[in-house]
Image (cartoon, rainbow, N blue to C red; front, side, top):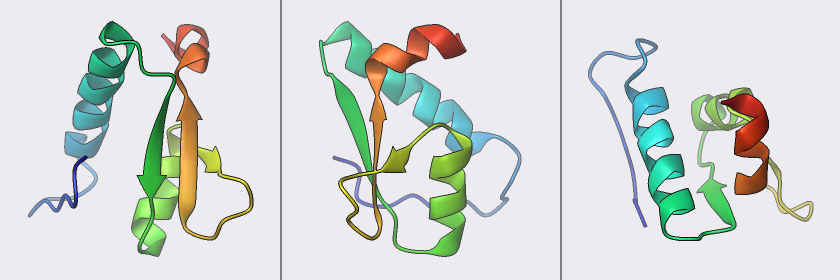
Length: 73
């Protein structure tokens, strides 16, 4: 679990790079999905941009199914 990320410079790819690393590790170790708890509008937009979808209608919770990675890579 990663509790929170914040960067001094935004929108230059740091979050995307970390997400790519997390996806690779999750696939390597057999995880089926990655979850995102969105606490603000920026993190929600980030998640949606990267293929996360709302999880069971729960506000602020998003999920990414790892089987969908193969389509993106």
